[in-house]
Length: 293
Image (cartoon, rainbow, N blue to C red):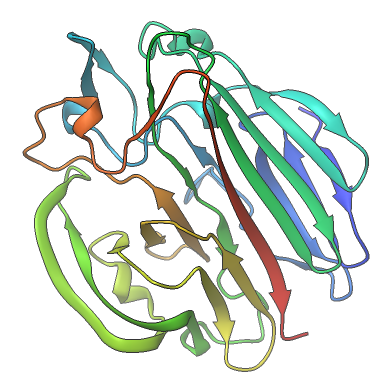
């Protein structure tokens, strides 16, 4: 499937209509590809949009209006071909307005749009959700899942990389069980820190899921050299994830999170579910910036 290509003075972005997913983001002055390649040996994703759920449902099922349905982890938007409704070389908009083959598993009406634009060394990304129903609330969550190369530049060692938070943070790590559900336990993670030195064994137990960060942005990179800053104002949860031996790190701001292991399947009660009234819309703006070069 032919990607939409956007270019500024410093960035070239390749966005696939499949999932409206950013599949490539190159820093032109250095020739550095910032995003993971999507090699299925480790993980075929690159930067999927998570919708209409984030994380896993208990037993992969939920209840809506008295009926039981099922959805896969992170929903279905990443598996659907979106319509390209605008492109001009520096910006593009994509629209998903139906659940397609998932209609019987998610019978709610929705319109989901993703718009990208590049300017200098920054890519701006806006996600819009509209509820076209005249009668029912639209229940959904949404998340971003970009995977950046770790290391961004091969000459920099893995252990030179950190996550730098915009503000000093004190938060716990949410424990995720073997089924990808929240156990209900919170593990002390850090107190009054704005920097987390990265190491592969940090992710031995899976994703690092943090709740209640005050920072609107997280910067990934070494103390000196190329860094990537991801801004996602208002995200109640952030996840950080990789796989053993994989050369990437995902920075994942979420409006939603996995079910609790004790969940009763009521979709409205799932953590982070947004209830959008008929005729209302919801928007979220994100930004990826290259720094340090």
